Image (cartoon, rainbow, N blue to C red; front, side, top):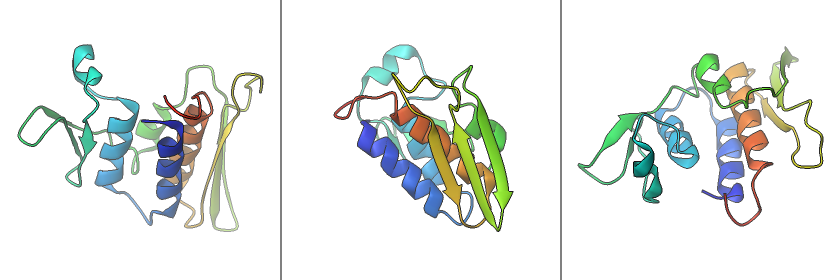
Length: 140
């Protein structure tokens, strides 16, 4: 998945009203996060589906995606080790920032907001943007 697609996922996360297993699976597929052997991720056809599973092909290998949109613990697994982060809720808006301590030479912090005051979705969007900031524009 390329930078624009990861940023598109962050926008989709911010627009959610609550947990969404399809988005969980799309995040896992996009970031190649899961319990598969390393060779399996070489295939580019992994797809997140509405049942919350990531599939290589219909009827083929699959795994259940982490609950990124409903669990702050799962969302925080996407924060790079050593990245500082913050989360606040005020005026019914959840705001998050990931990678505050970055040097701004190689990448930028990711920021996320959720108007429904859902801190999980805010931190997930921020983590996705922080990941995207380390990618080149045309590819991962």
